[in-house]
Image 1: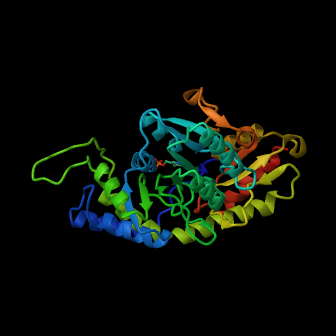
Image 2: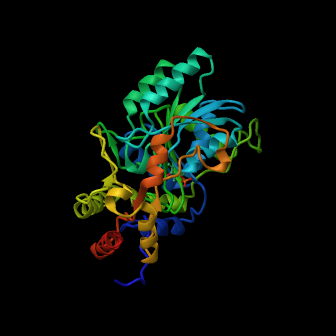
Image 3: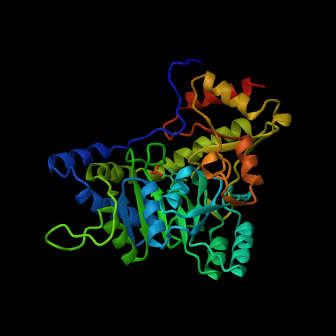
Length: 376
Ligand SMILES: *Cc1c(COP(=O)(O)O)cnc(C)c1O
């Protein structure tokens, strides 16, 4: 058991074509936030996820920021958001001067509980305090109960923004997440299932909405010979060089999904029989990518607690993490409302994300599994 090579949670994994596409950008001098790779990447992305329009952006966070603005979120508004998620799902709500209201998870998907969402919206409808939008997160490569959530939101006419940053390659009833709400958002950060080192995608079937996203992402420049502006925009466009990496990565997406699912199966085969270890379930309505293999530890049954396992892994130079800390807990969102919260808190307190890189070797896997079992 060598400690020398660090095992990362989900490192980048390049395919064959990325370098050639990047080289092409250099050879044609399209080293800019526009160019042919961006157009092709957007088109190829639409084909893969099954949406009509897309805008390649500098990050998933930028995409959420634009999406919220496009559905009309303004200072003083409220936006509902899953509590069990990475902070970038909610920080753009604050950028716009609005307030997040968090919703707890359900056990079967670890994602937003549709029952709690219905309670929240029904209560708010009576008070005439409906939120401006719902941010629905598809966590760890697994889709939420999308149909239930869309139906509730439709009843109250609240637009849904899907944060599918972690769920590219997953399916819900055979279709990709991100295409069900008014707007969908994806991320190509370095740890995501495919990466452009940093980047994001905003998708929608509404052509005007995506055109406006592109407009806002390029400093909101009005059509004129000179530089003319009637609203404030952002510098959020993706680089043509990075879009080249993205085009290469799209070609191996399905391989990456299968590799991640195989890694999950290896963990399950080795660990599922131990009392006190429970893997994130795969909801029956979809295919989870297992972007990260996640499990919870029952310390009484397993014999050691979550933090002991994390410390042992860290000691072996293996990167593992607790499940996301629910956003209603950290000081930065102190005072924000949350409906429920106990499920997400429990998943956070007992949950571990294990190394799940699609390039993980079987020797790496053995080392991780050995370390976990040696804790007991
Ligand atoms: C990674 C991530 C984001 C943000 O994407 P970036 O491209 O890193 O800005 C948003 N939401 C979730 C759930 C994520 O995991």
